[in-house]
Each structure stands twice: as C-alpha cells, then as structure tokens.
Image (cartoon, rainbow, N blue to C red):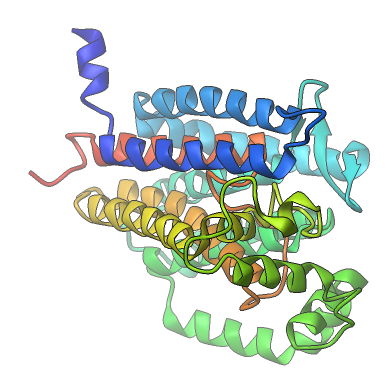
Length: 366
C-alpha cells in the first residue's frame, strides 16, 4: 500500500520525457568520448551512474512534503553562500574557472545548487513576511541582498551564465510575487545606463565572447568554437551523418562536445530530425509542467514550482541559442543532455520537487 501511494504521486509524463532525454544523453556522451582504445569512457560511465542516482533523487523529492523541502531549502541557502565563498578560496580549477569542489569521487559545483535553493529561499521568506501575499518593498530587501551576494560570488568564479540565471530567476519570481512595475522600470534604466561600466567589469575572455557574438574575431582563433559548432550543425543535413559518424565530433574539431556543445553533436549525427526531436521533447516537457503548475491553487506552492522550472527553461534557451550563434557563448549546460553530475542531479531534483507540488491534493484544483 505504501509503495502504491508513492507510485501514484509520480507524474509519468515528466518521467517519460526525462528518461528519453537521459537515454539520448548517454548515447551522445558515448559518441563524443568514444575511441577505439577506450570505447566506454569514464565520462560515459559517470553519466550513466549519474542518471541512476538522479532518478532516485527525483523519486525522493516527489515524495517529501514540498513545504518541508522549502523550509530546509531556506536555511540551506545560507550554507550555500558559505560553500560559494569556499569555492573561491579552495575550489578546484578547470578551464580557467574555479567553480568546483573536488570530493575525490566527482567534482561538485555549488553554484548549480542556487538554481534549486533560491526559489525555496524566496518563497519561505515571503511566507514569513505576509500571510495575505501583499508585500511591501521592505519585504524584498533580504532577497535583494542574497541575490546580489550570490550573483557576485558566482560571477567571481567566473560563471556569468549561471550568475545571470540566478538573477533572472529571482527577478521573475519577485515580479510574480507582486513587486511593482515602477521598480522594474527603474532597474532597467539603471542597468542600461551603467552597461558600459558593467562591460568593463567583465573578464577579458567574457568581453571577447560578446565581441565574437557581434561578429568580431578570427574564425581560426576567437571564433573557432562557434564556427565549428555551425559547421557540425549544418553538415548534419536533414537525417544526419549517422551515429558515431560525425566528422567534427570524431576528429575532435568541436570543443566541449560532451558538455556545452552536445546539441551540435546531435545535429551532426542525427540531423534536423534529431534536433527537432530534442526541441519537441523539451517543448512538451515545459508546456506540460506549466499546465500542471497553473492548476496549483496555493500561491506559495505555485510560485515555488515556477521558480524551480525557470532555470531549466532558461538553460535550454541559452544553450541552444549559443550553439547556433544566436546568443554569446556562456558555460551553460543543456539540461538532461550535457555531461555533468551536479547539474543532472539538480535538474532531476527540481523536476521531482515540481512533481511533488503538482500532485499534492492540498495544492491542486479539483
């Protein structure tokens, strides 16, 4: 009876979409890291292990009361701030960035946890400010401070993409919570006016990426990554070159092909049909979750679920946008497809948490 009760709380459509994406992820991490000397790379093995653990995490988050998770998430966010500080001091360095904590078995990226814990922090804090969901500007002050600290600490790693996702997620949630339009108008004006100063504050390589996006740079140097990505995508045609047959992938012309640019590998080997399949899976997943969230009648629960979904949706748009050249290149992984244990577990935890909210009889409309 206990097991049956738990099973009924699972959103099987979300689980199906997630499982299909997980299988595709493993296939193309295998393809992008396969060699004749080592067919099954350590990256492929770790990702398979990561998905097994990830779906266990999904099941756990489905079956824990979302209100308890929100309370734990609020206090955990203060611990996360300390972890972000520790990362800047003693973190593991890779690809010129200091974003990870090496715990020997794998490298853990604390900034990814902000995508999961920030929505809980915001919702739990606002619940303590008012029972009627009518907030004053004073109610948001602590949230502004925490978001600013988080943004600076993540930006210093440096990880501009994740820092922006944190700020955008928080901003959308505050807008949904009722922060005045006047505040957002003044914020836009201030950011626009200070844009030249903010641009100068970026790391040289970050400024170079923006310049490349605007058309500058040599195609054999600064533009190499995006040019190889476009070649891979374009050469796939309609049906693709076939699994394990992509030349940009197999000959290692495409950098970061198991991580940020895995969508380019899919396009090269499965063509337009494969790309369309991925886009449809994401579209169905996001639309299904939005429809389910819209049925939630509890304001705080609905706001929390939306806050958990926003980083996933933003990561999809940003990653695909950057690999096809519509957005500057930033270090944002493609959810449930790119290699990486931390972001895989965080994504599945977020989906499980949303599942727990949308299937809760106390929050859903009958």
